[in-house]
Image (tube, rainbow, N blue to C red; front, side, top):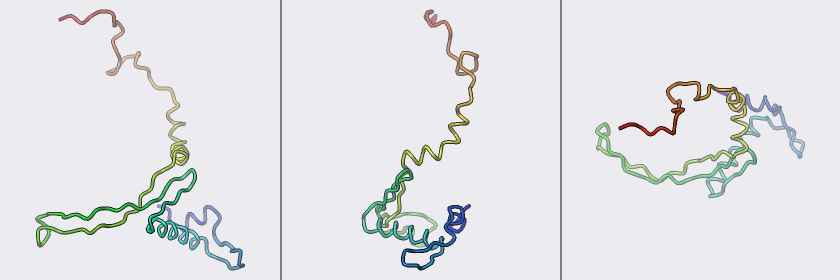
Length: 128
């Protein structure tokens, strides 16, 4: 599993020089970006990244859960914000690019037989 250090190194963000002349570690830049995304979503906004997707927060309604394992037999969960991500069509295409290449290989047609093959003679009605 990749972490922020790996991603920062892969995209050349080992060290970034800010406009003010200050040098910033690449992982800190990525952490700052994600912290900003969370802050925007927490305040009710959404973050759209072209050809990637949309981040937004959704309220998960509080509820009571009953279980014999719990001491009192039930527990109450308060309302909570959860971060949701909706993938863009451009991001989906990039992600599935390698799968499309595999899918373009020719498959056996249903006319060659097999369990999904249809009857060749459709004009003849079924006998009772």
